[in-house]
Length: 468
Ligand code: ASP
Ligand code: MG
Image: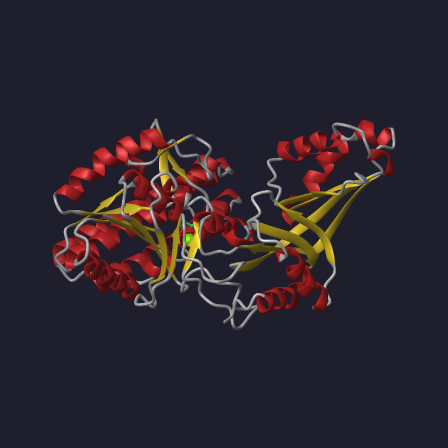
């Protein structure tokens, strides 16, 4: 049993969907049970969310025009793909209906209210996947495959944290198995909407942007799949961003932890939560390029084969800021770190990296630049007493920085890796502002000036001969 998830660029138009059908047909020769998960056609989720924002801002006519454009794009795709007259007519009606109810009328409601609630945003964002799942299923039927579109609102149960809902796995497993297993037994191919779920009351939610990968992992877990494949538009996980390092290579195999670390630290191939549901049963995950389906891609498992390299990949995260809380009186005063990070958490801000030296004169951490202002305001409020007593003297922010994360499972217990990394960084002429290493020892991350990113990444890549 195989679960294959196709991303937005893999279903972007009629030609791409025809390729999806070819890929599925070919895999059916190896495995008779396949479930498909699809993203919205590329760009559609953005357009839908823009429509909602336009409507909320009183620009309903523009929102309506955008909905019409979406309808046109999906209609063209249907007309190009579906030659069977009845199937084509039925599908066009379904597409019009989904866009009319889920998009045009909803935008009107948002326009009247003058506000797009998170719940309304999820309702509108779900339209893209509901359309693509139906179109892909119909395209498969065209070539005689017994495919059926399934809305994940029937399968994936979440809480009501709209726009970033949390999945309730036990209920999801039960619902998914009872809905999909009989279909698979009968030789049907379910084509499931990625990205969306529903509360136990049946209200549509989404799993966060880019969440279709995660849907693929969830469905794979529920069905106890032998493998999950994520089809995207790159050859797999790379040793570094090829825009920074021309000789960056696709990694044939990495471990779950390396994949988690890399996706968390900005390698955009995979949604960070994707592998979570796959861990319990060690279901292997492969990332493949639907534009070059014959390439092997990157295989992600618990124990990948040793490649002879101690580190696997280097990523850089930009658009982040370093916040430093300092004061000579901080030394030995308990509770400042606790207050600091409670204040950060109260703003729902994610901390990417923390570092404190043992002299305890400062604590620094990295967060997304867009969240700096409100975080610093919250910190000033939370540390008012410490400022008064001069335990804390300053909260400073550095904006033009980046985090470099060097990832590799083999770093664990191998001495000398950090020396080689920082030797290479030093020789490249970059200054290191802060360093952190988690005790899992599979990632060393450090902060440098943004303009030093290309040469730093290239220097580490060369030092460990990752391009060879
Ligand atoms: N369509 C959704 C998005 O653009 C989910 C996905 O493609 O993974 O965020
Ligand atoms: Mg994606």
